[in-house]
Length: 360
Image (cartoon, rainbow, N blue to C red; front, side, top):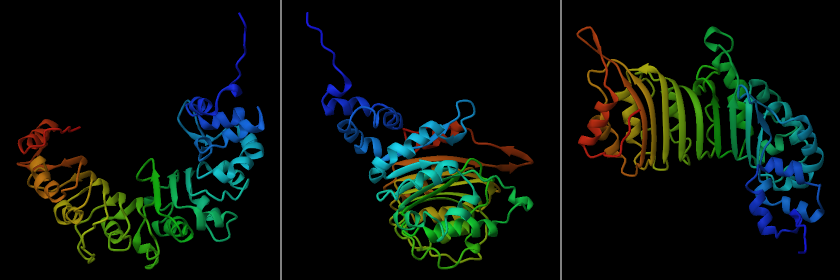
């Protein structure tokens, strides 16, 4: 019987791609780029392996985010990135290695950047017109995702909302001229100060063309300002609001939001402004397809149940196909607290024809 040895490089390119694309692209590039031959290196420059580079590592014990191992980082910066930089469209980084990685090349096709462990000093050092990366940030990045790691007790005076707006929010909104999608999220709603429109220049949103915005704001007025005609192209708006006050001192545009298709509102603090301020906002979203609502209500005379949600929200959104919610209603009657249990809410949905529901 004749024996034959079949090596990896002997396989057709189509088979090689099928095998390799099932593996982590960072491991593939680190293990194989520059190891076999030039023809194989060309194969590894396929978009499957080079468009998105996740150059972070997660701790196996506490899930903390850190840079990739120094040996891997060295090899990427010295041998790999110079060969594939023109293919890179999306970088996932963390601050300690960000500068070194971005200095490897100008990354002409880089449009998306996700940065873990973001803190105020990153904006102060890099999100300015004097930044060594200002050309990439200013003209190329259309999607920016910041996992905020600032941990300020600003309510006790560690930092003011005005100062944080000046150092973080304003630089982002002014430097990144071509942003279409901005997400700033944190592990805790109190870990960093929210965006406050009162502390921003009045014209800062005039030239922005966001289609997606995920942001933590100080009040419902900040949310309404953003929906006041300043972001007309917005289709996805995910907002966490610190406080929803029953305050109508500011007159906002009440035009319908025809382009908005996905909306998420979260407010952990109790509010008594649901009927007067939140419901009218929902009525403007006639073309909404996906709605998420997390809210805690106080000072109501009746519970918010399935019947209420149908009459006040769902029947006004003919395009809606997904509604995810947590609504806590607190009612005090005869000096006792009354709660509505999950089964009661689900039953009211069933009674009016919503059979596929799940309340958690």
